[in-house]
Length: 273
Image 1: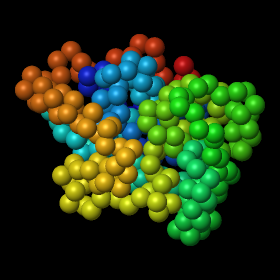
Image 2: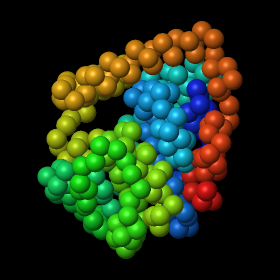
Image 3: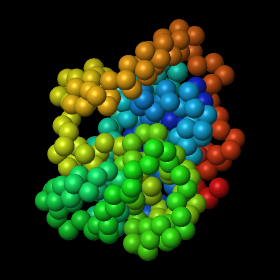
């Protein structure tokens, strides 16, 4: 079981990328009940402060990994030793490379992005076992899928379903549909499809180290992203400063503060809730 610490009611997995990869491998080998992975970054963390329902979705994930450098700062300010940060696109590639025998199902994004992604993955990872690329109809909010669609997803025999619906929709989708899926790993990876399809680029390393990858991404799609980042970044900086000055107080602990999600407290691949 990978440890989680709760900061401001959000459970954060304090594990290295290598430890997370081993846990995912074990979940697939043992055919455990479906469990999800979710990225904890400034956007998702602040959305979880504003929306109890979304906070439940993040805490329902068995692994909530540190996706952004500023979250490492927050973990440190909260009094915990922060593990390395790994961007969702890097975790995506790490797990694809490690899970050579696993069957991968890709769910989300547009048909064109999926076509480019399939082409690039076959070039980069010859022999990768893909069992489907599905671009679902656009919906503004996540919803519980029909039994027919869940049967269709389960029938692929996938070991991992990679979900790229964007936050907060993808984490809510995972929480709503996890119990109907017989796929051990539900990995919510946001923009990873678009990045590995070549539609967007990663920030230079010096920007990543400064915690400014969000700025690089916003400059590539300002019309869609400027409002998100200016809404969440200020709120996060205020929360970070308060945590650094006064600590996280009663919001820190060994478990996420979400009594309705015992699954989140069981560790990756724990018993189905």
